[in-house]
Amino acid sequence: MGMRTLTDPTDDLAGRLLPRSVTAAPTSAAPTPARWPGRWRGGLHAAVVATVALSFSAQAAWSEQCKPRHFRAPYFIKTMGRCGFDIATMSFAGEPAEQARCLMRGMDESRNLGPQMAMMPAPLADRVGSEAGLPTREALSTYLSKLDLEWDFAQYLWLPTSRANDNDPTAPLARYFVIHDTSGPNFGHRPFPEEVDNGSSKINSLNKFRCADGWGKAHVVINRSGDMLLNHELEIPWRETKFEQAANFAGALKGLFLHVELIQPRRSSGHGRHNDAQSPDPAFTPAQYDRLALLYVIASVRARHWLIPAYHAALDADIPNGHDDPLNFDPESFAQSIEVVVKRLQPPSAMRAANTQ
Image (tube, rainbow, N blue to C red):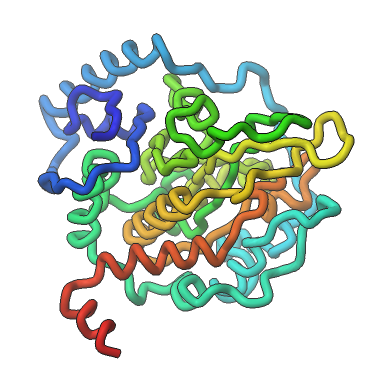
């Protein structure tokens, strides 16, 4: 069973405001929650608000207060990024696959943004931006229940993702799925410890990413054994990159991007005192790619189109003090994990047809 920070799994408002963690789950099936029409009416709303207050008080004892304590002056960016964002269309330049090839690139050895991906893995290239082949919500809900993820993800499948312009109902649904890494802890010149991929180790603890005040960095954090922390429900608009927060956009990009953090410790490569350019081997574990792929499918189903993946590094490349994450991410591993998830969600007849080809 996944860890729960809420005592009532039907507490929808609390589930969207407070962080919850779920572990890589057993395979025993659990009942799929039903949709709740008129959730916000009458006494239910009052009961939910009361439960939120109680849950928030309980969490405050062990969660961090993450809201920045100092005023951050607005800043303007000089360019629309390496991939040419167009505020009129609320998208980057090119077709969705072209955008993904531009946005899925990290830093090279010189710590500059690397070249565009020459060829995107087919499981991504054939999907991004389209509606074709999206799994049904019913199939995905059943699968999530088998993974013991019904209360954290399955129950929200019939809700949309966030919308741009801080959930403006006339704005587009989320289009971009931004991949980050935590870039820490930094071991300096020391070797990585043997327990780097152990889910119960301090390195992989999700507790340090909990935020009782609702200011968790990303929508979801995934540790190296595949456990997940839900900081913001996917309907909540959130910004994590400098690009999104630039004053040029006056908040219009808030909700256009969904954010996932992957735990990745770092160590120094070279002689720089604060260098953190070396990742473990592998940089990300198979469990992380599998969970990331599952979240990508969940988000795409709710957005009603396959989202465009993007790296944090590419979004902030032209902004001072940008980021290099996700360092040494493997698009092929991510794409193959997506393919595995999608095949598991196919109806039996489609699976039999695929096996006979």
